[in-house]
Length: 292
Image 1 (cartoon, rainbow, N blue to C red):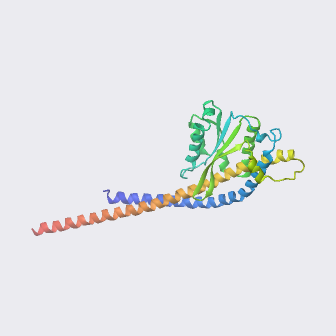
Image 2: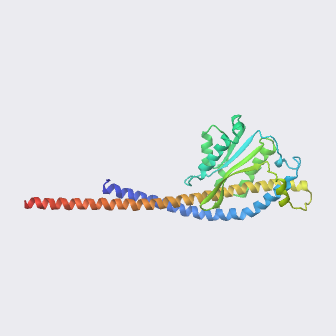
Image 3: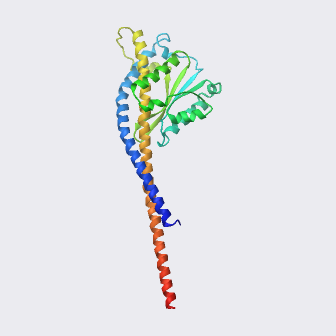
């Protein structure tokens, strides 16, 4: 059994760790509230924009809407969205594993031909894929330094240009969708080309829009804006999910530290009692020896 000094040092160490994890939990909870408000306010607008986007795209030719161009998939781009920091459970690992799964299964033949590129948003994905055998095209870790519409818009415009120039035939997003503070849904979303509605869905959601000045002008302006909204929503989802995951991880770490301190104190008390008992036995033994 460890001596009393070692146990006291261990208890102090765990108590210090507990204070750190508890503080990190509170910081994550504070950031989560703001991030959660942002994504919840964005979702209704993004959902309506996406509905209009699909309705406008469902009957368009490729000449009218380059972003709805359906062609043979030769070149693929995967955008992996993680965080810049760790200590958030499996948040980052899940995205990286999913991208690896897509490369090994869905896009296996494309990957073997060198026709799959990866763009990362977040240092955790950037660090992993920079060391891997996969093609890391670009890193946009700076987006998390100050996530806002302007940064997201600039990023999306560069992605849209790559697709409209024919550099890629398909672009997928891999990110964590925010459900609540303790739950995130790993999501793989086809960003481009715009997925057309099937005939049944068109019948249910189709609306007779009055378009001014013309459908062509509307499509030219509205579709890129809607796509920017969709990607910004994915970033907000990931941002809120990160803080939710970190808050949950730090909560569990704090609880584990509390339990560990209880166990160590129990061990300490038992060791202390054993030490006292041994001292009493030695005293009694010495007294008996003197009497003899």
